[in-house]
Length: 97
Image (cartoon, rainbow, N blue to C red; front, side, top):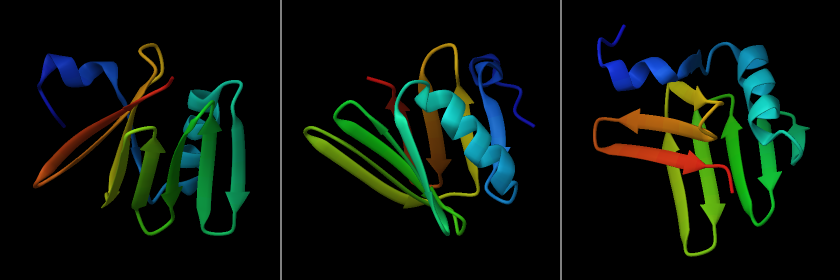
């Protein structure tokens, strides 16, 4: 568990807890569209998208950038409207438009 106070704003959700992943992504998308297609959940918000697969593959896109990685955990900041993913060589935050 992290002791970084900035990290406390996030709900940490393991990819292994698929029901929680789907629940948090639906909550994050709020009024956006969320599709569950077999092994993947895709949230579409205005002109952006965030998707996650059961194997941890994350894909995000909006005008001017795309992001792809494989992760073990998603970090949701529902109040701030963000999803953070971190790895050994990346630190990415997707913000709700």
